[in-house]
Length: 316
Image 1 (cartoon, rainbow, N blue to C red):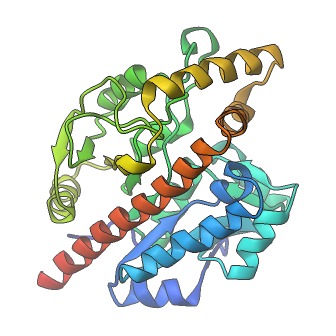
Image 2 (spheres, rainbow, N blue to C red):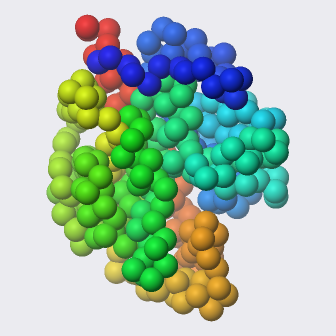
């Protein structure tokens, strides 16, 4: 598979960790990881513990992790343990999507990258597989707010596969699936016919496509990009059954969280962190436990896919 996401010249704004660069040079499997989960997705110290544990899952699977973040006016691809600790403790970390990227870089601010920004930076570095918890999408009530995540438009143009536990359940999943179809983004669920919804294995929607192995997914990615179809593939990996929160139970908490967000007039990029925090508090940690379990589970799946891609390359 020709890698069209080779490292590009970005005027010194890209800082690739030596371990990551060596793996890329040798054609080894590399898995990109976001930093929003560290700075905005979980409380300390669970955020740092989870980030390090996810990196270890990738290493145990035989790949190199590349956690992506912004600092010192550069896009860092691969963080040290001390840098992850810094992001986990700092209280002034920007949540960086594409809109914010030039501002945060030019102002030398700390920035935790969302799905969209992580994808773009991973592509700059030449990384093909990115693991996250759940993607953003069309928010509930978007017919009034026009709140649609930049994750979706970025997925339409950047050729990095995204492994997640589906679409965040706080969103309008049906409209998000429709938007993904409009943008020509294949949506594949790994190993089941039901499309998952982050904390839950089901969402009430069937998956558009189903594949059962990392090798099948690697073959689809090779085919898509080889015939000139740019853009991402969403690989939905259901949370392990023993860790899920049933969708019907979760919906009750989501409705409460949405009502509280409206009451407090929470808007824009602050909505998702607020909702996730509210739900974690009111589920007595059950949703946080599911969140930690699913990101580790996704890391294992993403590592298997990255390895399958690397093995494909070796056979060429």
